[in-house]
Length: 130
Image 1 (cartoon, rainbow, N blue to C red):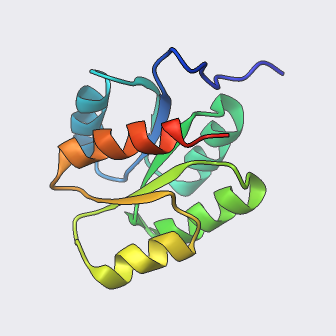
Image 2: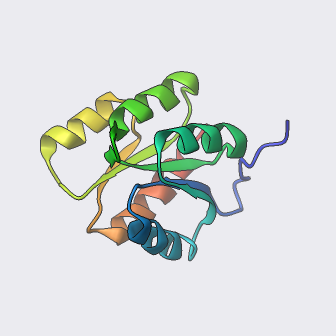
């Protein structure tokens, strides 16, 4: 099966999961400057299918993904693929949420209101891939 995993000299492919359409559009525009946006999804089932099919370099997941806890989805993804690079994002920059994100297997946590931090986090976790 052919994958979308990128080579060292290319741009990271990113899958974005957020249940707010306006946030998806904004993040897609931002990331398109330095990343290949492999897909955007708005719920758990779409995310799991897209992650399996697209095999992106980095997955960005909102902590509150509709009716689902994004951290549970992160845990599920990193359990299925221990080398998966997941970045959790939240409108709340809370130490407890940040810690729970890392415990769920996230490679990074970013406050939604700091979009430049998201680009930096993607570049950092992509560079750390094995």
